[in-house]
Length: 83
Image (cartoon, rainbow, N blue to C red; front, side, top):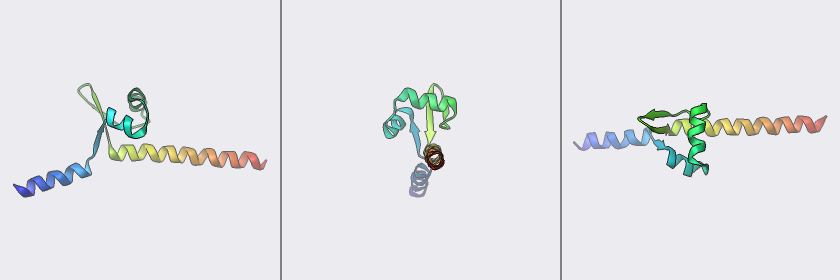
């Protein structure tokens, strides 16, 4: 029985899933914005009934995309200023 409980705890750590409310709080954006980003595909998520969930991996992917976007803008500005 302890082994099963331990495996479930490990699984929970590996499969961290956020509800919209949690994710909005973490990202410091409105819940409606999180829902829109999921709907638009900016953040990958899934629905269960009428609730929306996002995995930790998908949050990390979204944050990486923001970093890549920021890097692109930084390079573009640098190139523009050199001209």
